[in-house]
Length: 429
Image (cartoon, helix red, strand yellow):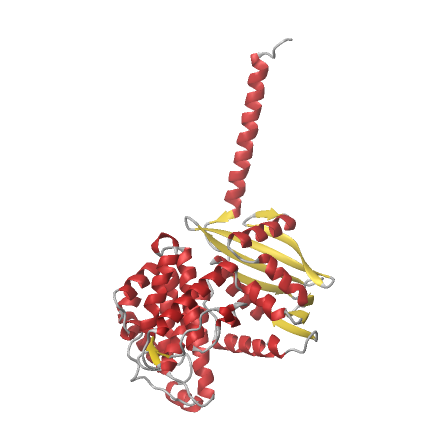
């Protein structure tokens, strides 16, 4: 048998090397085209109390506990509502920014979702997805990553993989969509038609809380039950409850409290505390939580006030979950809503909101800093400045007469004074 000549082998090797280099070059070029130096979607800073009020009204109208079984219902979401919802979901799941745009002049109707995902080295993955109305459901018709077009089927498979890698229960979310019969894009809004089944609430909770997060919530609920069992009297300071739960976060998180695990543990600790302080059971979030150890019922206080502890914790949870613009808007909406009712607008409560927002933000962005402060023996004064001298119980008319409303110069001066007090605390510097 005649052996092939070395020249022929050399040419084959050169061809294989050239092919390999071409593939590597194609990957490098594709990556260069897909990854950008700046986000296409900017950080959101325009969430307003009006947005929060609209969201609360939608939630009240579509409370699944009030819906007749299997009755057909319709949920209409405008572009602004979709924009905020997508932004919240992207921030919570990926630490990303997202925007939604409806195309009123397109036939058939279309919607575009743009997402900017942060990568290592100050780089960004900018993704654009366009959906087209087709029958009862929109279909994904175009995907672009940076300047690279991607087949929609490949993009959907990648999205499922990414959800799984982030611990997001994609299959549970899809099962929760079984109650949705129709989704229609119109020029001004997206209309969702749905029927709720007997097990809808359980499926929604399973979709919203991944198994890993359920385990975190249970661990912190058990620690809270142990801590409250040793408290004398009928109230407890927030500064007493935070250290043992955040110490548990250190024990449970990898690397001694740094990184994503610590942030997830802190979110769980804050949510457990917020549910406890507002006297809401964990079963609202987690199916089967009725079997968890129940903490002793106590009034949680901050500077001796139960309402300040509630404001602090709710704002901390929102900030840890979704970022500070939403937390600021929630706190301000609450005060505006109170001004219309019996309790009135309170700058003292607003200080508690802002302190909670600062704390929640630090809990996920600088966990070791929070651990150090709590381990040294934090007090109420370390968590929130004294606010007893700030105006409270202002009716809507009095608030507008004295301060000109939100954003007016007099309001802004007092708001800046609150921020200065917060900035003077070592924890928030």
